[in-house]
Amino acid sequence: MLFSLRKLEYFIAAAESGQMTAAAAELHVSQSAISIGISELEREIGAQLLVRHKARGLTLTTAGRAFLPGAQALMARAAELIASAQDFGQSIGGDFALGCFTTIAPFVLPELVTQLALTTPPISLHFREGSQDTLQEDLLAGRFELAILYDTGIFPGIRTTELYATRPHVVISGEHPLAQRRSITLAELAGEPMIALDVDPSMRYFTGVLRDAGVEPDIRHISSGFEMVRSLVGRGLGYTLLIQSPKVEFSYEGKPIVTIPISDPISALPVVLAQAEEHQLTRRAQAVASYCEEVLSRTHELGVA
Image (cartoon, rainbow, N blue to C red; front, side, top):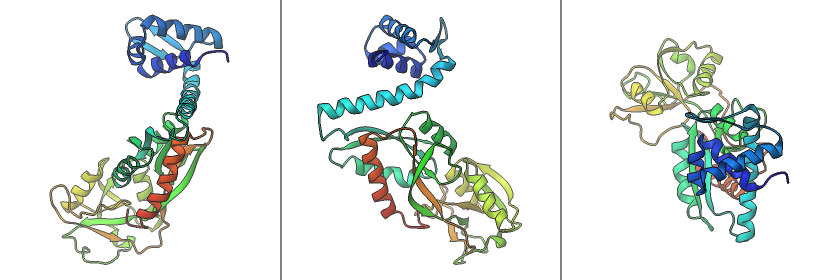
């Protein structure tokens, strides 16, 4: 080994916090220990990793940006190895960070947080919501090991496992002339104003579904908020297409909303568990992945979640 794990820990803490003082406070060591350790690490690997600014903290060099993801992954593996040695058979318990696409999150994360806390040993699930692209960038950078995404726009280097599948549906006001219908063709939406959910890749996917059916969407309002879109629909300002379907068909304002299946032959869109191909999962991540595959595939039926 050219360097110690302690020096690697100093570098990661400083890089993530952007300050020597913050890194020292996090690791309960002196600022000089952090500075000396990082300087020794840079000499040992033959590259400058951080630029020190007197008043503006720290910034990563090009070498530092390339080095950080591997360093984070190495420390995660080291922590897993230590935990396994200290308490063999119990190392899967503890904290775990999971990424989740923002509109999927309310439908799966509460269940996962609750149930994983009841496993033996318990797993304390922490999560980060975000867009499809952001979460995949985080996976490739080693910021977390797993993320729940839609199976669309998957980056090279990301491996996925299907959890369950769902189909888009039309959401309209309870006072809309089509509100009593059992199903709707997309052609019947031609000329109707559309409220678009703008969380990548939602708008691209939904407008693509409409155009494939020969319908040019007439987008009147755009929002990145799932409930904002539903509230605008509840006001009768237009229809929307969504994948997820809340159990309560009312907007935040209490306006009635109707969810209607689409009769056109649209392929189901899988919800997947994603990981970076080059990163080997820790035992804790493997346990979370197994739980997600078993429970979510059973509790989320096609077209419901």
